[in-house]
View 1 (cartoon, rainbow, N blue to C red):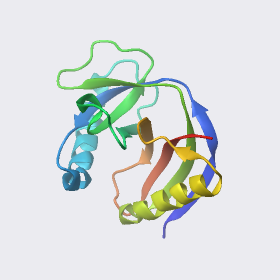
View 2 (cartoon, helix red, strand yellow):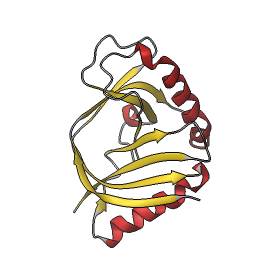
View 3 (cartoon, one colour):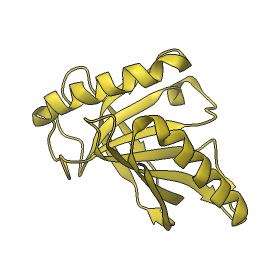
View 4 (tube, rainbow, N blue to C red):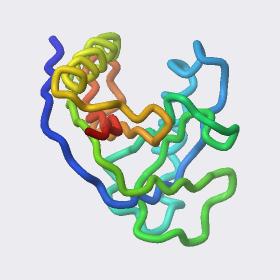
Length: 157
């Protein structure tokens, strides 16, 4: 059983991520993102200044305006960039306002939670900013039947 909860409207300050960029055909993200997440888990000890090793972040722009924004970034938050490990990338997500929902349950029910969030945004007269960075904060990601993720959908009034 999946549980979703609209938590709030929140504003997050700048977030610095270190990890991997996943760039592949659209139908392959469901396969490639978990692989990158596992690789990140295996190599997290190489990353300096990690704020919380128990959380992974996904970042993406829904409607990217340039090639540098295409794809999906999976990373961990760091206080500062220091000696980035070979093969890894950095990404700065600027301070933004988000509508937030948390999904706990099966991976295949994630789209239901996304749809609920998008409906809530519309019902409350917010506008999704599809050309800005959106975040996914993973608390638990190893068991596809019991995923725990918070979505931060960038919005404005």
